[in-house]
Image (cartoon, rainbow, N blue to C red; front, side, top):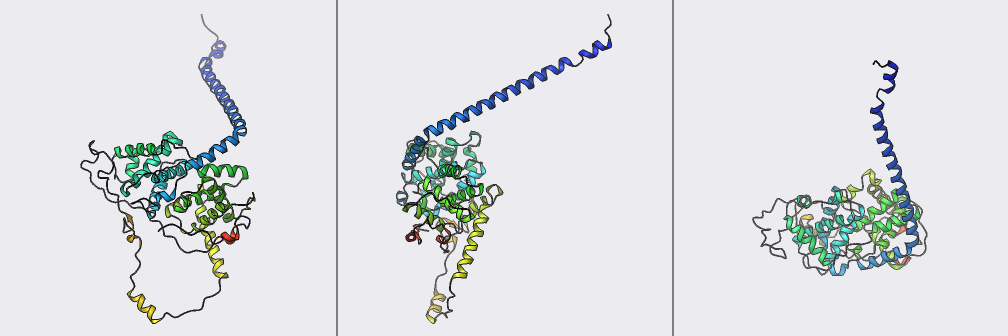
Length: 404
């Protein structure tokens, strides 16, 4: 029996189109249901946050005090010196950027490092290893699982100075020393809360983050609470960018001292850190800070009275002839030709050699480390800070306790 052309045309391709239509509809229904679930979850989170906000903030304040390192205890280290810190922070910042970790992971890493150094004696050949272990723990604790560094990747960044088993041993030793208390309310968390409440711009947030990371290099801020650091850095960022300051009441003595001490450490930041914040993603705030400081220095030079010229005396000339010239970076212990001398592989200092970890170990060539410029004299910063933030008696600021 023959079929008409009309009958054959009406049924052609119908069966092949229907499955794709059913699949598209199924995906659309799933997407709508997922969006509804996210909206409900966000609303429930907002309601729970409003209801338990006071309890959450109280818990954060408690954890802030419990997990605050003591710089005075780190002063008692026999081999670890403060001049070594900038080199390790540079390394951690580069590793943090290489693995694209979250901002809070960097601050948690430094917190774990300082807490461990305030509880255990650390040999200088283990200092970088402790930093790597802290980075591993911080990344596993709060970062994305697919971005957690692998031990072999960290070891490559360390130029193969350590065995894989040493990373595992140090990671467990850090955890046991800290009684597995890892959680810490970082300065990044408090900054986000203040920025959301005060509706600061993205540029102010980036400048504040830059200032907070500058503070990681210095002893003066090791024992500073993250909440105080967040408030001070945001106030300083607004002043630098010419944004109106939020007048939220008087500042106490600790906040004033933190604010002025921060302002005194903004000159000549680490090259590694400055390069990081020259990226457009971070609003190029490192260049804007450099421009602002240059403008302030020019204003100070114009305002200063000219000093009369003075001829050097004969005695001073003779003293200059026979005086020993100042050595540069090569004079720092552990540094030669602008590079960090690789740490010696641990030799029976708390690591198990029976498992063959140290067998036939060869010291690889040294790796370059970005040198951190030494602090320099600079103009005071109190002149451009809002007067309600700084009491006149604090204008000179505290004495810098950094031994280097």
